Length: 370
Image (cartoon, rainbow, N blue to C red):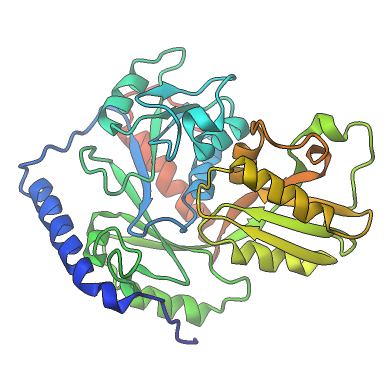
């Protein structure tokens, strides 16, 4: 297994030590019961990380939604709605958009319309509001990106870490990308190493597991990204023309992303595109009118009739309602879905762990036994 070098800004380490001291003291206040941590009479599963973004929380949350819904459970998801242009508690509905609830919650609501998707920076308040819902009342609540929100005591904590940037090999902000030290892993019952290479060998997984140095009560899983077939972001815009032969080596592709780690997607697209242009913005980027003009200009410079704009589902959520998006571009914009695959034939064990936790901790005695 090749050694991986995690890029850090060593000259910022003094600031990281100061930041780490504040995080350590805050965690101790929770450990000493000085700051309150509230539990609820409903199964609560937290999906989070120790890193500032880029570990794949949204596709893993979507995996859990799909799994639990297939088991006949009523699922609610609570997120803070990062970079949304609203405040307080909001329950997503058919009229919600990315600006109001955030791009990731909007994406989940579009894909899982039967799930209750809500946003609230105050997770305790948000859970309380979700539990007021009926017809039906949620059987389980998923907390998206709430590992550091310790005011809620989740019954099951799932901690994600990127295979290419393990939390044991990173350092605290601002020198590295850790929100808290690697010792925070002790609060997790499940640890998932995400974004594993397609050609990874069992020995590499074994070495990675040893590097994490987990405790006996913690279960370790490995996942990798699986890309689906691109779908039109504006289906009505392509209804009057045949769909192009997407990504079969004939398409000229402009890849537009506003995610933390766009390179793996770019490498995947490059394998199937005739040519690739790339516009990369920061994670959760708020596209401006200037950005729209840049996308239009880059696309106009592409040669050939078979051309398209490819983006992620998360970015599509922000592009979809943008007032400055050219009508001429809409027929060419496609979003590529991202799912996760659990490795080492551990999918059934993982699924049973999740569903078993929900059934064991639910007060609803009529939960389906599917």
